[in-house]
Image (cartoon, rainbow, N blue to C red; front, side, top):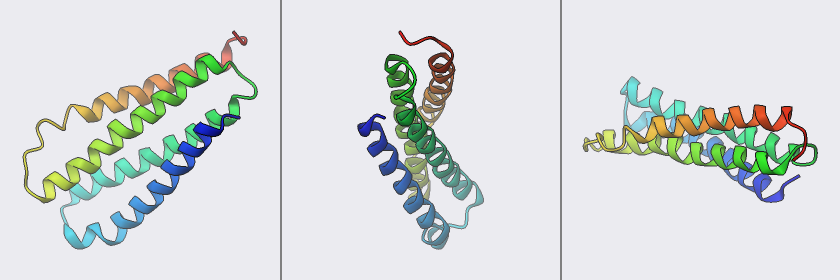
Length: 130
């Protein structure tokens, strides 16, 4: 088990619950724009999915190569920050009617880190410890 990654997973998971509660109660009082609400909820969902994935990775350190699992964990963390973080930022900027053009490319970059993390997890669990 890797305690640092467990702690980060717990932090991101708890934050996803708090942000989800805000989205369900507070954000709907601020905006009724369905696209903004959907984008925000997507950020929360992916943050929670990858927090749980990070939790699993932290537990897998006992059985599989830590070299590969570190890459997986770091990809998931980076993906959460870039993908979900950019969707939260887009939400704030759109509500304030500020230009969001510069934020748009950050989201797919975060998605690529998520994909890379899952592919690296496949490598980590199918290779012999090395």
